[in-house]
Image (cartoon, rainbow, N blue to C red; front, side, top):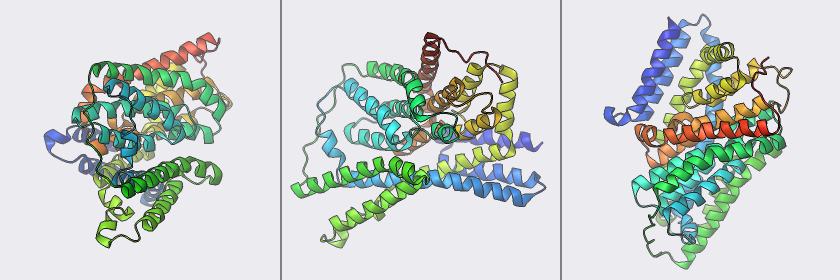
Length: 433
């Protein structure tokens, strides 16, 4: 009975998020209520409430690490924006065609997400596009392309997506092999949707940028903050690889360094003027409801995970499909609805290394599908949630306009993966433990 109620509450919450505008209820409220009720149902039916509380606090630690990472990245982007740092990039754009601009943005996103990660890259690129494009509809289409490109770019690098990082840390894949095996499939998942959106913008040109009125001093300060901010964002994955601390620690360190830089840069300015350039002011401008929405949806999914529903679902797929391509595809599609982290964790627990050793094609396929599947629904990935908050993208708009393109990219990536392995004389079809 409790299982049925839990599933019904989760579905109702999901529908409320999707119907945010007709209901005139902020999605953060729906997500938070859903998350709290899911955990309430779980603890009320449990015979050991203390253990449930312990599980909740364990999940809250993981969730908080994502939220602090998101908060730090968004604050740094706000600082760059406050100093007109993006103007340095926009003023040097050599194209006036929107289709070409989309391609440039898409390619940059694809490769940057492999170095930074898909969440940080999505925040930076969506913020950049908001400074270049005046039309809201254009910005929404660009944001959709950025989400697809960021998730596709993240899955072929051990630093780019949390699920690939999990497989790398777990010993299922090695860094060099995952790059070699997933680069072409990831390009396949990214290029076809972006080509369609480029076709949609054919013949359209950018509006002439307004002439900058910033002084030479402001331009110099903007350059300092832009290069410092981007440099410190790039520093985060290196900090993680050196210290083995979670990524949010590197992001918080970067934010602290930015705090020192801005304080020193504006120490001679009048207090009222200097305030708008501070980290404190940037944190005030961060979209807090989006962060609370992220908290709520992750709490709801973690309740399903702790209750064992996601593990049961993975086992059911394993026993029903009995085909590794179908299992990987199903897990990828599911990752568009629930967080891909527990799904990949379930797969890691289900399949022992004796059956699927390090660098087995099955693990590569899981990394591909669970990485790119999150683009299908906007709240299926951290990149999508961040873009949704920055540009206020409606759930239903994304579902109508971008969903089918993400599905096209998802299956294109799978096709390229299968073709690549067939060409090499390898296959994971039918190999089942």
